Length: 183
Image 1 (cartoon, rainbow, N blue to C red):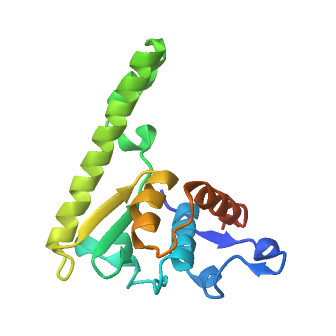
Image 2 (image 1 turned 90 degrees about the vertical axis):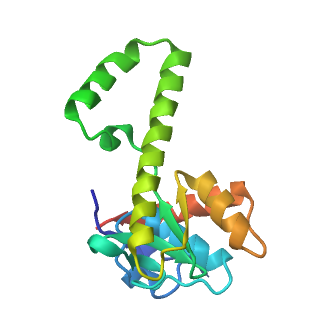
Image 3 (image 1 turned 120 degrees about the vertical axis):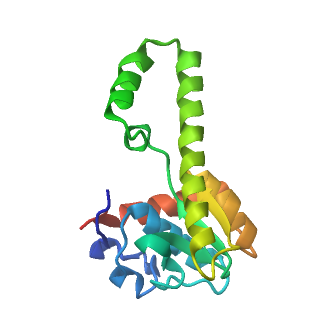
């Protein structure tokens, strides 16, 4: 489920500090998370720029697209796992939703986490297959970040010369989310 998002012009500039590069509000994004990832990578990864079709929404085979390309060789997908959307079978989803609340807390949490891990792995495998079939990206590394902390650890900590702290990343992410609204 994709939707266009846009920058709220009133928060485009905050306390005379520009939150976004000038061209970012004119790039079409499918989610607030994509905008946050793009802006944080532009801020913290030297030389990285959000360029549609090159470093953002990178074309893959079968008409698919990868979220981001970093340093020409690392594909980044920001993909939080959603149990509701991840289960393809309506019957499985209904059964899961019906029985999960009846389980003890520790068992419910363990089952939910195991299912999230499985859905994450299935998504990662599908993306790896697409990468291997895409000319020029066959040998690319794939990072699938499920949340802000994974994005910070796997991307900002790795590619930034002076990475922000995890706490600072969360703060910047929240600032960006406040300035973005559904279009």
